[in-house]
Length: 484
Ligand SMILES: Cc1cc2nc3c(=O)[nH]c(=O)nc-3n(C[C@H](O)[C@H](O)[C@H](O)COP(=O)(O)OP(=O)(O)OC[C@H]3O[C@@H](n4cnc5c(N)ncnc54)[C@H](O)[C@@H]3O)c2cc1C
Ligand code: FES
Ligand code: FES
Image 1: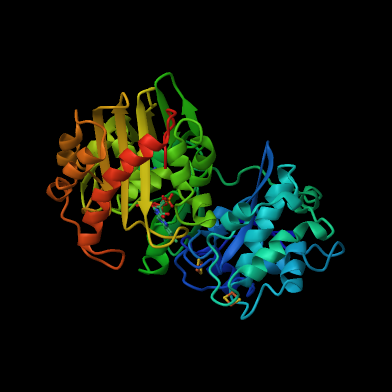
Image 2 (image 1 turned 120 degrees about the vertical axis):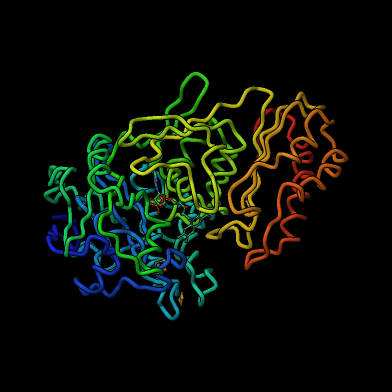
């Protein structure tokens, strides 16, 4: 059984397909047709919805792509659709909706409910953080809309609407929710299925020990983190797993902690949390995360999911391969540590054993003479997958490359170190000549393929050019701060 809040009341669902998406449930079971389906792949943002979660810190509002999010995600949470946003008696329309009308932010209207939800989340987050709507910057608005594609408006009217939000009577949804009955104690326990139908089931364990029991009982279960890769298995490949175990309620797998020499990042830490949590120890990673997918995807997508998915074009594996990284694994046979270097075996094949999962990622902090550089090369700045990803860890006194690790995505069947290129650069002067000389070693390390994102020649050329960019960027920054 799950329950979620929509349209001023708690909705209870006892009988639903365990792998049903939120979009599918709303449109087919609840006739909520303000929620649109465009791509069903997390790309276009037409299905964007706003969710609020209650915790001891208060309410957190965030957006999701409902086309690839499981219905189970809604349990004990508040859901907002474009048709449930205006609070009766306050305003007929939410200020975001009124501004979209007044500034002609819609033409065909297909993207509009999603755009409204993204702006509503920005609106509500601003109020929650005690910020001012009049202080919203172009970048704030841009980030909020990074996952909403509009083919008609050219975005300018939408941006004007967002800029004008402060001029409407304020509507605080958190205040309205506080007057409701609120979330209930968890029910049922994490060891019981939360949805079951036709012999298929969905679990949401709340601890690693509950997870271990479930892994032993259901060895073929899908481990569902944010679902931003797995969701596409449902909607594009029409798979229907017998058992899904959602990891999102396990607090032990969340968050970032600092040790003397290392940073430990829980596998279930979302990209949105990484953007904030890594801003200090690894600013270049935080800036790179900003370029991953869209705000909606970053809200649910996790670091553990990116690594476990083992895509050759995932953005995080090259970064952590270039650093000194150990995976903390756990499972039915107990915990073990594995260098990330040994994790990727073949195309989408990893060293994870059955019944095992990534609990956390442990990465060494940078010393004063070490720097990290990350470059994502893609056709679009937002909401796009890398054609090529390169991360470089550099140890230097400013004149000589004392040590270097280079890792790439998009260049081979797995995320991979460029060992020949590293050798060509190690102990060389940190100069453009060294970079140019080492560029020829790239083709010894990689035989990339040509595909829709880039040709093999382009990938090799850009990878070589990035070695020069390393020198230029290092020399351009005179203080010991890493660069993205
Ligand atoms: C529109 C769109 C844009 C995207 N853009 C980018 C991008 O720019 N860069 C990028 O790198 N990726 C991108 N992705 C891919 C995806 O968002 C990331 O790979 C994300 O990090 C996956 O994390 P998740 O938590 O959603 O994983 P899930 O989809 O839940 O899981 C992915 C895989 O990992 C396994 N898994 C998850 N967590 C664990 C764990 N702790 N232990 C063991 N196995 C686990 C799952 O069983 C599954 O096989 C994009 C996806 C979409 C839909
Ligand atoms: S329908 Fe396109 S992102 Fe969901
Ligand atoms: S108004 Fe037509 S897609 Fe945005």
